[in-house]
Length: 322
Image (cartoon, rainbow, N blue to C red):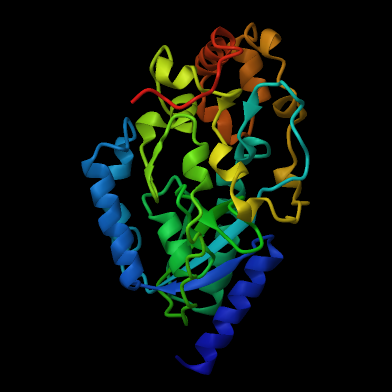
């Protein structure tokens, strides 16, 4: 590509980093061979029913980026570090790290829109679309294609310095920009994440069965009672689950703690008073979860999850019964 395109790409990345994104990278549409393999893997995953109740995962636009923005030529992938070096109170019910701060959908979307408007000013007549994980896009596959990291055996994107504590966003644009090289996969023979999952949700490397996943059941499932095969093995989790990430060697290296104000943990999520929270009414939950990604968990679901944890307190936490 031309020097002008290279300079525009470099400027776009600098602006992305100034907004708090790191890493950042660019991919060219339609992507390469690995992206096609990821698309085929998604088809197999859906055919096995591993999406459980998440019917939106079958949206055909997820495999057709052009359907999200006709004429798209490039994808800017960005990562937002959400690792904060604080610990939960020992014995308190556990909330997944991604939900500790402000709703990342709003945070990332707002910053990507700033980038899109800037790019449109540089290239009048160009079009763009900001995408967070609520959009029907293979976000981890495009991030991998753009060189941000590789998809690990637990299904999360891993970066050499950030580990897997990254929230992803993408800016689709009709502007042709030079692509970065896809990231090499560096999991090797490690399978710690697979062995650590108490419900055996990682059925094979890179393949997670949502029907066995603690995160799915505590966040997405609208069943009135958690299945016994899940509730018996919660290991303290009531909102998501970080077990497979906690054991990953790439997350056990010294990591930079985020100083982004939007990632600052809400104190009650680190010290969730289980007995008290069981009696919080809907208005209290609404106030506690204002501007939180965990508003997706309705108040009755929080109570359901806490009740399941209470029923099985002191359980062994062994593998799930097939």
